[in-house]
Image 1 (spheres, one colour):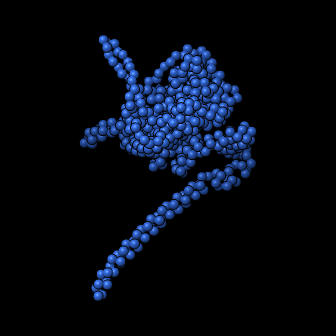
Image 2 (cartoon, one colour):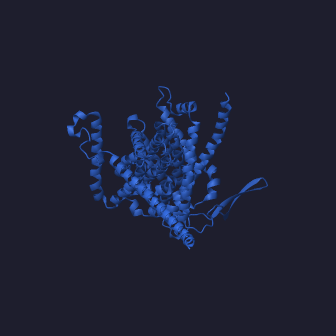
Image 3 (cartoon, rainbow, N blue to C red):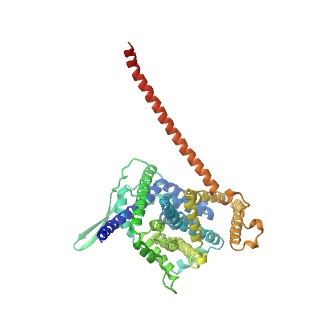
Length: 537
């Protein structure tokens, strides 16, 4: 009984600390996005300017992915795409693959966040699976819908039909999260987003302009004889880098290092705090509330409710990256199951489409329909993806794929870094190079690769379910070399290289210590030599 007041006081102290850490975690994500934009924003703008490249669907997909990885914000990249369409520099058909690519690129943030839980093997397995379920959903949706769109124009025609029957008007979304985080983040850095958009539109006059905002528009509210008069005036911005002589790249790298440090620190402390709070009876209660399904016959409704919650939360915070990154630590410690996280993530994918929609509603009247059509393509891409990979339990392949990736990273932790490099850099770059080489080269290489992958999947299914239908040699993969069926040889190589590097550092340190000791002994003998000579005399 004596411990009860202490435990209550401990919880009362930890809960406010939890919200403080969460606040700084979200702020660090915002600053991280600004850092990436400072480092790669001009490159992103230049990439969007190459309309000849963007007319190729595969190249457009890769461009959308790489640009979103560069700026760490699908909201920024989709808003730029909508701006290009509304200005007439990009047509709707070319914009659709870029939208798909930006959907893939935004999932890299929570995958990076999952790496922060690599210290605990089981937590890392769950967190990485929860983060990569977003990647798997996006990649599978693109593999089905991009060829379908190229062949039939499904998204383009569907969005055009909706635009034709809509009465369009301008609007503005509530940005609850920005209201809370901007007082801190705007003291650190403020960016002029119009510079990236202007570069993408080919405006050469802003090429040498800094992305760091120097002058801010201030809204002044004056009350005269009971009436409110709103006026705007310009004044010098108030943030750390307002008059900094450093280049955008230097500022971006400084912010990148600082924001990653704060992000990692907050995440580690959040996980430890959540582990201390959500344990014992409290953890089981919360787990039951979040992961328990509705009673029969309404069991199927539970997932759709989670999907709606994910969409509403993302609509309020206007960032799918923030929402999915925030739930990743909860997945790691086991509070949210992978099945529930999948539904929340799909809802988040729908909620983030409102950003592009509202950006489209701010377009000029003559371009409003085209810009809104692109924003609706973003919405329908995610909606069709959900219809493909969620309603029927057997089609929820992203969950099984993510669990397999989680198991692999739990055994080989280096695989997480390899996965990020391959999926978000090497494969997109290879696809881009093939697409730019021409459709004959891409078809000649791509079709055999796809046929080979389909054959491997079919063989795996037959080996698992009907091995008796296969020849004895094909009933397993033992006839292949070990390096083709297992990551163990690569793990052994990485382990040997790591040990060799460690031994090399240890040997160099030992040599430095030995040479230092020799130097000290030599100096000691030199100092003692005169005393020995004088004693001899």
